[in-house]
Image (cartoon, rainbow, N blue to C red; front, side, top):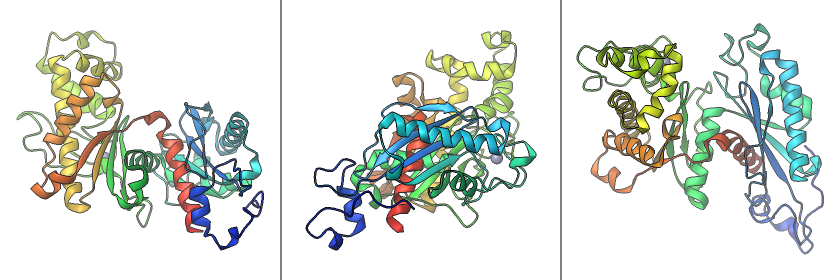
Length: 371
Ligand SMILES: [Zn+2]
């Protein structure tokens, strides 16, 4: 690990715990304290997003800061591209490389808790070279800085939790559901990601939910890419719209505009726009998605009884009115006990495009606190 830039403030810094220094010392200290930062890198299918978090808990990058991820070109090129993202964000923020104590890395799963890509590969990592590839260790070897791994859903959940609760984050728990191509998210307890023994905790998309009263009487059981029928992702995801919900509902609306769109994939992407315009077919689809998330949160309420439920993703990146309508539907379909309902909060995840990188940085800062 790189040495601190200085030995700390004069007048007995050695007696101060490292945790206190981390919380209190800003990046550029007037007292000459050892400044440090962590960097968050979110590795996506086409781009890497990067951010820098300083020792006072402040993000030094306000906007989305991206560069090409080149994951389709195999591990060696992708690792070099992450090294480039790191260099660029440090240059952008004017932070010297020696100040970086750790790098948080987030990637799509499935991967182990330590960042080894699944032996069968994954959507973004289909080439054989990626199968079983130790992504975390390879990046650490390339950049010479400790790398802390989280899957991107868990990283985004950590950021949602931290930004919602602020200083109270270490005292709180939450469950985040992020509706995208699939259904991602994570579970946070006492401010930390629940990772699980094999790194597969918080795989909320593949939890079975009861379908009675959710599906129409003649609606087939939705199927998920994972092989399960009737899990959350089979309904509450873009893939679920394309494969399951839209084909069924289009049959019920024979004159709908979306029949004239070339492909189901393209039509599925348009459904949100119709939802904003209160189109009856689109509202049927989003009501089913909201009900699926509510049933997921009902299960979560009995497992972890969290302080908050967060919803993010394309489904709530529409108009403010639509987003609130959707969130209210989710809440209505979450069955809570009276005591739970009195204390819990439901919220949308803001700045989702930056959540992966920011959550990865927060995880790296937490790792520093423990070491
Ligand atoms: Zn599934």
